[in-house]
Image (cartoon, rainbow, N blue to C red):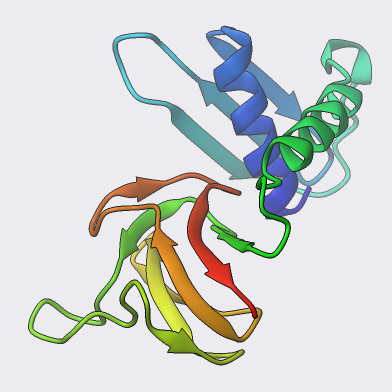
Length: 161
């Protein structure tokens, strides 16, 4: 199971209202716990190889995740088809600056080129630079500095013209 599948599973579990989901496979075990009063808790454990675990207790959720992905893609389209939305590729904390004493990577109205760093997202003490996929002008910054972001959450609106 790769990180995107885990992120989609977390998103699905949080929306479903289920309090706990456990999945055990040959090489890993994942437990996702949610509660209305406490934040999500996620535990991933590596298991020794060659363990036979019956698949009866595993709930097939891939179909619902695929359907959810498709509906999210349709909802993320803007009314103005000329604008491009840059989304978060990971869960983490959004930072507009490389450090507190430095200027922001980009500002509204600024022209950018493909590959320019737009922001960093900190996940598990790693700072991941998010680069522009297109050249254009920053129309809107959708997230405030130092706020948490979710996987696939819109961050920037760019006019590529």
